[in-house]
Image 1 (cartoon, rainbow, N blue to C red):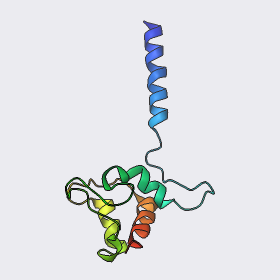
Image 2: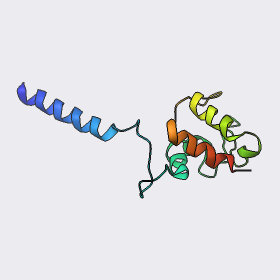
Image 3: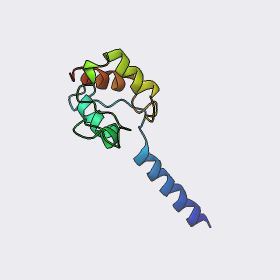
Image 4: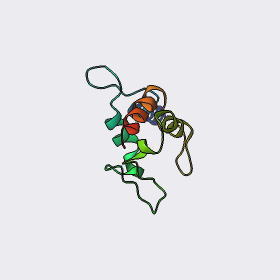
Length: 107
């Protein structure tokens, strides 16, 4: 019984360690600001596409020229609060700001 409990404890610890850190902001390798392209690739591209062209029959908007439609502040609000089928909080803090700035340049 003790061996099973110990194994379960170790397995859970490994699983939690592998999944941990989700709330941290992503920094570039130089320790500077978050890399917006990397963040987009990790958190957004599965719906909006690696090429930013969206898909899903319009469910996932094309972001190739989103900066011509929305300001950085409006983009950041969508990232933080969600909109339509997009859930809120996919990115937070400086990560959300960095991606919003990067997307606002897409015109």
